[in-house]
Amino acid sequence: MINFVEITFIEKSFKSLFMVGLILLVRKRLNTKSSKWANISLWTIFITYLLFPYTIVFNLQEPIKNSFVEAIIKPLVFINEYSRVIENNLGYILSKNNQLIVSIILIGYVLFEMYKVEQAMKGSTIIENNHHVNKLISKFKLRRSIKVLINDDLKTPITYGVFKPKIILQSYILKDKELLKYVMIHELTHIKKYDIVYNHLKNLIACLYWHNLLILAATRYIEEDIEILCDKLVVEKVGDTSEHRKEYCMSMLKLMDKYKGRDEKVLKLNPTLERMIVMRKWKKTLSGILTFALVIILSTTVFADVRVTNCNTVISSSEAPIETYINEAGRVAVISDEEYSDLKLEEINVESPSLRAANVSETTTLSGLENKYYKFNMSSRNSPTHNGFTVKLSNMSSRSYLDYSIIIQENDKVIYKKSFNKATILKVKPDRNYRYKVTIVNNSVDSMTYSIKINSYVR
Image (tube, rainbow, N blue to C red; front, side, top):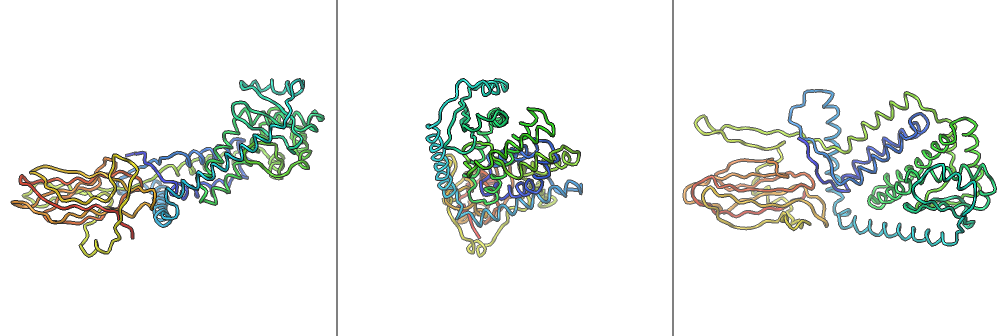
């Protein structure tokens, strides 16, 4: 069974470490030995994963007999379990409210920096009748209008703007026809691929996942790989020969002395040693393609949560009817009053107005064969995802005898069902960000009175 389930930033942050490490391990090889799009394809999967608010949950039935499938599933289950532990331990520091506040501050800072760049561009002069510039623009056949400007206060060429892109050049570039050709093709390639949008998405994940240093480091490599791909496309545009590669590298060297620092809000021709090496060594090989294919397969596993479940059917006696007893993966346990008193019980205030918080406390009466349910979830903006919740039924009475069932549903799926004839306390291990529904069913024809308390607990 497959479901789409919401997943928190903390859990995504932890699970993404596997993918980041894998990409960084092979990115240099892929840049020189694989498809020119290899690294950007992997980074696109990475960004999509971080921005996609859901995970794909695969519910499998025990036992798993295929050793190959088991070898794939076990690491996924391991990652899923330990991400829960980390989320619980860091939840108070990295609660939803804390994450949101810092992210808003960082996004505001990025927008302010973009505004400063926009203001700095006001001193630029538009180039209108340069034959070589207009000819290069026409070769790309772009539907968006492109403005080319001169600004000698900036040391290197840059491109900014999505719908009305602008290329900022320096006067010395216009005087060198070969340099002008390569610079213009480079910047126009950025515009054609909407790299400025990609760059904004990179900045967005840096703001959202500010607490993960490896993700912040990854954004620097994403920026580098955007430029490397652009270099390859430039050479492909002019004709991929050793002579053209050499000419292009020489054009980058001419800009080296003019370069001072980086600005993440724009795209520019920024020469680095790695890019020069890639331009010299890049050659697609079979081993590089196979490496890329393997990493693609392994990387996409971060989108999945695998949960192994089991259901049990119990016959209470040979003369009694069959009682269906469901306890998925043993996630619900009956506990004693002493065990209950040792738990730290807390309230959780949920965001959804249609759901109650996991802090139910009431006394009620059910007529014969009647039922009542309680809906809630385990999400909180100010505290971590808790270890679980408890269901305590006490002060129970009936005119004849007690006969009732407790049914627990997780996103409308029954994970627990059992009948009781006395007061009981259940301890439930939930999954993150799921909705829960606890139903009390009076199986007797006589009315039943009970007190119920449902609370979250932490260790």
